[in-house]
Amino acid sequence: MEIGIDSFASAMYGDNNTLSSVDAMEQLLQRIELADQAGLEVFGIGEHHKKEFLDSATAVILGAAAGRTKRIRLASAVSVLSAADPVRLYQNFSTLDLISKGRAEIVVGRGSAIEAYPLFGYSFNDYDALFSEKLELLLQIRANEFITWSGKFRPALNNLPVYPRALQEKLPIWLGVGGTPESFIRAGSLGLPLMVAVIGGQTHRFKPLVDLYREAGKAAGYKPEELKVGLHSPGFVGNTTEKAIEEYYPGYAELWTKLGRERGWPPVTKDKFDGLIDDLGVLIVGSPERAAEKILRHSESLGGISRFTFQMDNAGLTHTQLMNAIELIGSKVIPLIHKG
Image 1 (cartoon, helix red, strand yellow):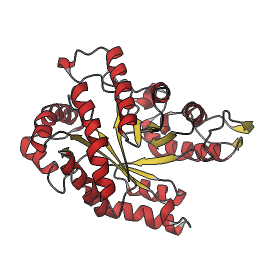
Image 2: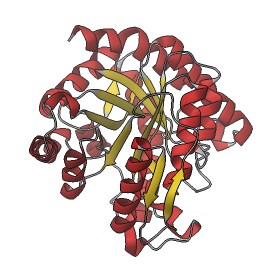
Image 3: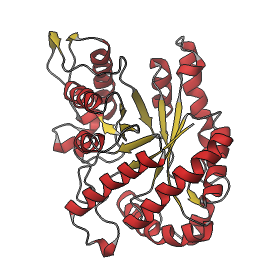
């Protein structure tokens, strides 16, 4: 199992939220560099278009990280494909693949936030139709140097080449999903690796959806080893479980209560948080031993996962706390996971 981190390049953590964007970006690059040195296998950068996050140009951040790292894989988490041009998205990540010498990956999704749609001139009413059409084009571009294609939302391409080509023969494209059964079935039917974002509740409840993915992939003729499942969840690793909770809870409660006001969720309470960090809850918050134990339990409950990524840097944690967590993941969590 690969272990990594996903970041939204949060600009609102630490020092009473007074950190400058320049310093926040530099610290993010330092964390990616440390993750590479500490032995983490993947670092993902999300895509948002709002004040609180600095990740609107995902491939630019990953390109800067590529020059400061040697082995860690560099991914989007996710690229909002519905509001993007598949040609340009492929070009950005094929260029990243060349810069990083074959370490680029794309995780595409429809996005859980809607700000990208009006910003780039799309209607949220076309949420799924946009994604379906653009995913089809992106996969064609990956497979073919010259493209002939037509659709509803983008001008047609008539035997036109797309350059540069990625260094990897088949640039990895994962499908990022939430809780929609159709999304799991689509990923399986296309034989694409699946990245499941579970941010609340109990992880094992996603097993029927993962089963749909594997059944759709089998029906489409793909082998079990081709149908990878990844899991993305919020979490944090501290020296002890008590210390991790003490450091993580205040910022987590503040952020998710704020999001709740925007999206109609109830405020976070300590009782609710305690349920999320228990044995079956989604949050991976605790000591290295506790984190490894829960990741392995989640993997077993989903029928086996190939990748787990922590979402850590949007809970009010300081750069020092995040760097310590990365060191603990590399030195303790990963060896415990590999030991099984």
